[in-house]
Image (cartoon, rainbow, N blue to C red; front, side):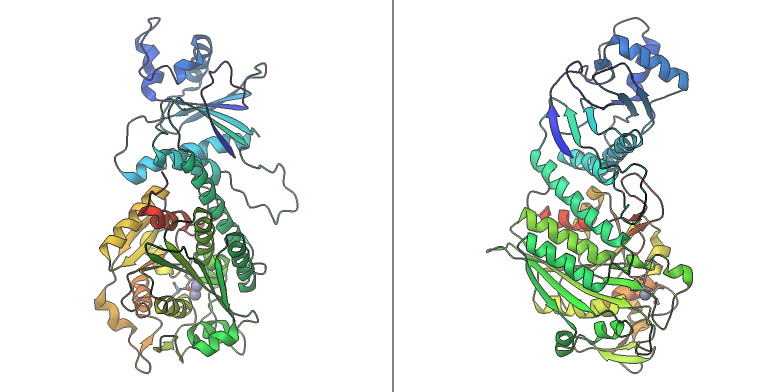
Length: 513
Ligand code: BES
Ligand code: ZN
Ligand code: ZN
C-alpha cells in the first residue's frame, strides 16, 4: 500500500473510493438551519467539501435509509457516471477526543478496518480519505489508522484451491489533508504490519507444514535479510548444554527440537532486551493427551515464537540503539513409545530438577531452558510471549493477554505499549503465596499447580528460571488466535505481540513518531 498526502481538491482527485468521515453534528446541521448558510466548523474539509449539489443528493439518500452518522456506521454509494471516483463511503465519526489511550487509538484502527472492508467488498484498489477532521498529525492516530487498513485486509488463502477474488489490499491510499503527516510513522507502521502478517501466516500454517524445522528456516531467512546474528542449537548441542526440559517435551515426536537464538547487536547499545517465544508447533498434550476439540487450534501454540520472529524482522529494519535478542525454543508435543511419562524427572539448563506430572504443561518446560539461556547472557530485561495456559483464557477471555511481572515500571511500559497497539495486556499477580503449589516431593519443582489459578502457577514456574533479571511474562493463549473477524483482527492467527513488543523496545527512543 502506497501512502501519499494529497492537497488536491475534490474536483481534481481521481480515485476508486472516496471516504468521507462524518460527525453526527455535521450531519444534523441542515435540519436545524434549513436553507441558511451555516459556517462549517471544520474548515469545509469534510461533508461540506463535497459541494452543495452532491451533499444535497447524498443527504437525501442517507436520510431515506435512516443513516444517523453514528460512530462506525457506514454507507456506500456508487456513481456509475462519475469519472473522478467509483464510490463514496460515508463513515460516522465520533469527533470528540477520547482521553484513554486504547480507546483513542482503537477508533482510528477501526476506521481503517471499515475502509479496507468496503474496498475489499467492492474490489476498489485506490482509496482517498477526506482527512480534514481527523487528527492524523498525531502519529498515534496515523499509526492506528494505517494498521487498521493494512491488517484489516489480511487474508490467508494459501490452502484454498479456488479463490473467488483475491484481494491484494489497497494499492494506493491518499490522505487528503493540509496537515503534516509523518513519513517515518508511515514507513514504521508498514514494516510492523508486514511483520504482524508474517506472524499470522506462521500461526495459520497447518502444523504439518509449520514444524520446528520450518520455524528455523523462517528465522534464518529473517536473520539473513536483516543481517542479524543467528545461532542454532540442535539436539546434540541441547543435550550437551543440559536443556533436558526442552528435550523431554520433544522426545515423543519424530520432528527434531531446536533452540534458535537471533540477535540484533548495535555497537554501543543503550540497553539489551531479550524476547523469548514459545514455539510448540503442535500441542497434542503428549501422554496427558488433550481432547479432540482441545487439539483443533493447537497449531497456534507457536504464536509466541511467531511474534518473536516478527519483532526481530522489524528491529533488523529499524536498527535502533538497543540490543535485541530473540530466543525460540521449538518442538512438537506428540505421543509415541518414546514420549515423556507423567512422573518423569528432568534437570533443566539452570540445574533445577523438574517433576513432569502433566505432559500437557509443556510450554513452561521448553521456556525453562530458553529463559535459563537468556539469563546466562545477562540482558537488562527479559520478555517472554507464550500461549501458556487455558486458565488465562478462562480468566481474561480472548481479547486480553495476561501480564505477569514483579517490576511495576515494566508493567506500566508494556501496558501502555499494548494500549497504543490495540493489544490489551492485563496485569495478573505473581502470587508468592501460591509457590507452595509447585513444590514437588521428589524434585525441586513440579510442572503443574493445583486445580485453581493455573495461569499464575505457570508464571511462578517460569520465575524459577529468570533469577534476578527484570522479567515480564505475557500469556497470550486467549488473544493469539481469533475465532471470528473483528475489525483489524481476522479469524485465525492474530500476530499478537509483535506490535506491542516493538513499541516497547522503541519506547525509550522516539517511538513511532
Ligand atoms: N498450549 C496450551 C495452552 C492453551 C490452551 C493455549 C488454550 C491456547 C488455548 C498449554 O500447553 C496447555 O495445554 N496448558 C494446560 C496446562 C495444564 C495441564 C496445567 C492447560 O491450560 O490446560
Ligand atoms: Zn499443552
Ligand atoms: Zn502448549
